[in-house]
Amino acid sequence: MKATSDCTMGRTPRRLGIIGAGWAGLAAAVAATQAGMQVSLWEAARHPGGRARTVTLETGLDAPCQLDNGQHILIGAYGRSLRLMQQVGVDPEQMLLRLPLDLRDSQGQGLAFANLPAPWDGLLGVWRASGWTWSQRWALLRHLLRWQMAGFRAPPRQTVAQLCQHLPAALLDGFIEPLCVAALNTPVQQASAQVFLRVLQDSMLGGPGSSNLLIPRVPLGELLAEPAWHWLALQQVRLASGRRVQRLEPLLAADGQSIAGWRVDGRECDAVLLATHSAEALRLLSQLTQEQPALAAPLQDWLHTTAQLAHEPIATVYVRLQGHPPDTSLLPRPMLMLHPTAEHPAQFAFDRQALTGDTGLLALVTSTSRGSRQHLEAQCLQQAAQLLNLPADRLTAVGTVVEKRATFACTAGLARPAMQPLPGLGSLLVCGDYIDGPYPGTLEGAVRSGENAVAAWLQPTPPN
Image (cartoon, rainbow, N blue to C red; front, side, top):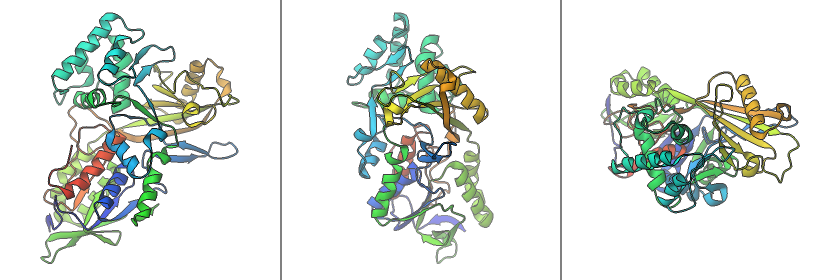
C-alpha cells in the first residue's frame, strides 16, 4: 500500500468525514460545508464543544447544576473565533463582555490597559499601573520596545523566564507570569518565549480592541458549540453525537496500492479530518498501523511526536455564597488576578453573578493544577473567604471541573505534530490546538487549525 491518494492538497474532497466536534472540528465542519463539501461529523460526547462546553454537575442540592467545563476567556485578537461565531448566528458583542486588559488584584494593584486604540491603551496602562515604581514602568516599556524592534521573535529554545530575566520581580509577578499562565497554561520557567511573544504581538498590535478581554456572559455551550451544531444541522450535515469512532480504514484505488478514500465506522468518505484531542488521534492512527502494517513506517514520526506531548490541567472550582443579594456584585470587577500560594493556588477569580447572572457564584481557576479535587476545593473555599472577607462556612463548593488534558504544555523548543500525518497522503489530515502553529493551546488555536485544514484542500498553501 502506498501513502498516496486521489485527494491531495489543493483538491477539494466531495465527501468529508470529521471526527470530533470540539471547536476545531466545528470550525472545520462550518468551513467545509460553506465550501460545498458533504460533511459527516462524529462526536464521542453527547454534546459538542470539547473542552469548551456546558456540563451538568450533580451537586447534592435539589437539582443538578449547569456549569461550564472550565472558565474560558478570549481576547480581541482572536478574530477567527469571533468570525466563526458570527457565521453560525452568534453576536459576540452580546455574548461576550468586552473589557480592556485588566490584571489587577482585589486591591486594585497591577496593570490595567486604558480604553484607547493600540498601542496607546498599553502605553497608558503601563504608565499608570498601580503599585509599580517609575523605574519598573520604564523597564517594561523598554522591553516591549525591544521585543517589537526584534519583530516579536525569540530563539526557539528560549523560555519566557529567560526572555524576561532582566525585568524587575514585581513585573514578573504582576504582568508576565499571570499573562503567561492565562495564555499558555505553562509556567514561565518552561513556557516558550516565541509563542508568548506571538500572543503579545497579536494582542498589543493587532488592531482596535485586540488586547481586550472577552469574557462569556452566557453558558459556554451557547457561545459556539450549540449554535454551530444547530447551524450544521440546518445545512443537512450528517451529525452523530454520543458515538466514539471505532475504526478508520483506507479504501484502495483500482491499482490495489494507492488509497482512494476512507471508511469511518462503515461510512465511506473521500477524505477524513481527525479533530479529536491528541490521545484519541493517537488511538485511531495507532490502530490503523496495526491493521495496515504498510502505513506504520510513514506514520512513525507523527505518532512519536504526538506521543511526546505533555499536557497541563486546569481546575475550576465553583463557589457559591448563599443568600447573596442578586443585584450586588461579589467582586469589584468581573475578573480579578489573585496572588497564588501553596495554600491558596487559584490564579484568577471570576464573578459569575456579574457575568451570567448566577446569583452568588464565583469561579476560581487554577492552571497547572495538581493534587486531589477535595483538597483543591478546601483551599479555594479558604481563598474565596479571604477574597470576600467572609467566614468560610458561608461558602459552598457547588462543583469542580478538572480538565486533566486542558492544554498541551507549550514549552520552549517543543516539536508539535504536523497537520498531515502521512507524507504524500492528502486525504487524511489532523487538526486541533496542539497541531503545529503559532498559537498555544487556546480556543483561537483550535479554530485556526480546523479552518486551515479545510483550506489545505481548497488552496495549495494554507493561511497562517
